[in-house]
Length: 217
Image 1 (spheres, one colour):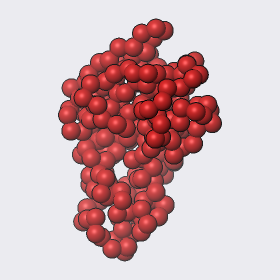
Image 2 (image 1 turned 90 degrees about the vertical axis):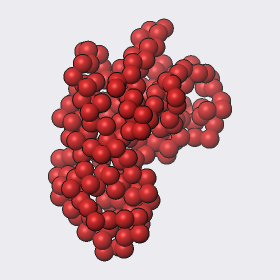
Image 3 (image 1 turned 135 degrees about the vertical axis):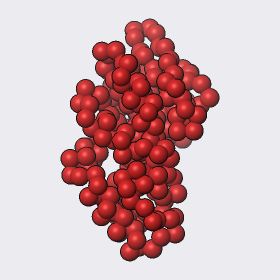
């Protein structure tokens, strides 16, 4: 079972986890930002070692902020970081906050997260694969074997991902790009239905020769 982008919707994620059967579960990333309960989502997933969690571009932006708040702060805040900070009890920032305020917010965030949660985030992988099914956050270069993909492609996408099919028969399940309805197309399985805005979290169940979609509301 593969879970689409959560973006702070702890309520939908909890609803799924409470009802999930004993299938392997993989989450495509983007647990934080935009929705209001990113801290709860991260803590929930960190407490579930039975769930495989991949890193998305929003986790990358958050970690970049922690590494270099003055450099990465404005970008992250523009893309939902304000909501994530608020979920950890860090307030008083805006997209135009100065370097001193960004450094202070970074210190507060790291303290609120704790070393265990931060270390878990830093160790998230970018790819999970079983047989001819690969799960990533955003996409992959169709000309490159999955094991050789860059983190940039897996977390942010590739210009040819939506335009060209893979020649190796691997199906790539991904989020990142919001779609009205989950679908399969030319070896790609799109499952980001914009949970933070639509209230619909998509879960794909993949079995030999069959893919079904469920919507958590």
